[in-house]
Length: 593
Image (cartoon, rainbow, N blue to C red; front, side, top):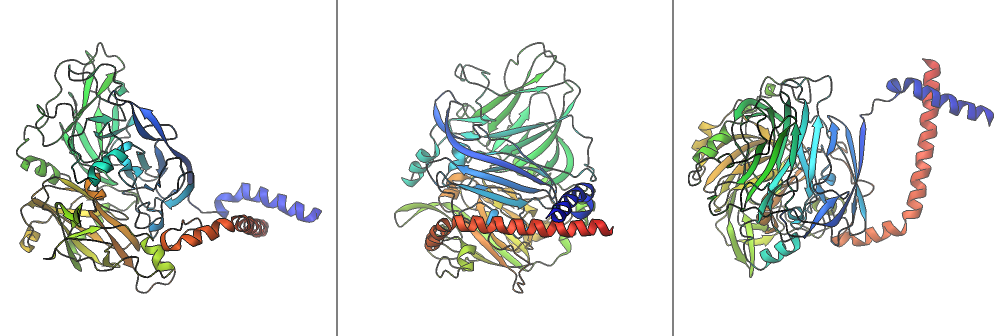
């Protein structure tokens, strides 16, 4: 016994001394996120919002390339909950994606621990609740994935990071907004725009007294990285800072060709990084503005978010009119042209030391083309629904991949059409059968009356073209096949199309959706099922030990609960056995070396 204890202690010492040699695992960051309802008055009207750890918006999730991220989500709401992580490309692990087609909801008063790796990623993102318009009530927060120290960034290290979550806002909560949509009505004009969960600074008499506004404290001469995310419901926003240039440097994990803008359009679900230098005099503070795009401000004046940029040596408050928005309310050509100026920085390293531009996507043969057409909502069986290719998606009772693993029949159909069909619209659980390691062209054809943002989970894609009208094969002649930006969320203007290219190398079931919450809620989404035909157990992760069961597998959840004590003891026993084996192996290894 004494010898065993001595060996154990020596093993611990050896681990301490030689851990860098004995273990090569990537670091882990852990968070506990408790989602609750709180009362707030961002626009001067008390309302129920969703807070994360008591904060609205939620706290920053901060990690570094290749880190493992563990987030224990505790659901204190009165309905099911899922948290999704758009733009974070969970390799082979759609189980952690946090959308209804892949994951059973976290039940009220229960928790679920997400466990994923931010492999080979950098950049600015945000998390949010994905079910039933909950994001319209909050629950969102920023995500920062930093470069490893050994990988340089393509600009001087900023003096600080400033996260800005901007978005349109309704004084009704998400359940009331759901009722509006369920009744067949549009949501109508938002009640305002929030910046970091706060209403506008009182820049004129239209803003009520007593509204709390965001103040950004900065020092003269310093340069800050502004990470700006549109977390709103459905409104595209124009972002600008009075008297200051916005140097675009990154979007959703890709460094961009650096360009200065006086204002910049940020559409729903999109994230951008700008470098802003405090190079103005300090005679007064400056306005930070997020205003509704493509609307007449004389009509939608209240839909404007205003924060204050405060120099530490400022001599007075901001005053006067707001900096003007782009003067093209009835002409969206310039907005589309701005999007075309967003190019990839082909000389910059990303998460790895090799330049991102070394991937010559324009020289890869396209294996499949998918044309996805969106139309204005229509009535299907007496209910207002939104469609892609004539199909309004109905979420399955049993998540898609879970149904596959447990051989549940009829949970979904693998028959989503690759192009619009000349047939009446239907509501169905129809999934796209995509080819593993295919290089696909996806045409997003927006025949709706509103600008939409489309997002693909698990992937980024190259935005190679966009234009007005109906896409045709001849449009390929104008594709950007050299330095198109790679991202995960892209806008599609009404009466226009956007073309993207994606390499389907990430096995799993991945959501393809519109980010505008009203259209998403009404069914404008599908899933891409991507399975390795030569599956050998290594291409895709198995379901996690804490997987939640629902639908036709509900009984497995009950069985899991009844066996929880035994399972816990078994896990503890396994952990102790593994620890003992690891300590013994380490001890003998350390003796040998």
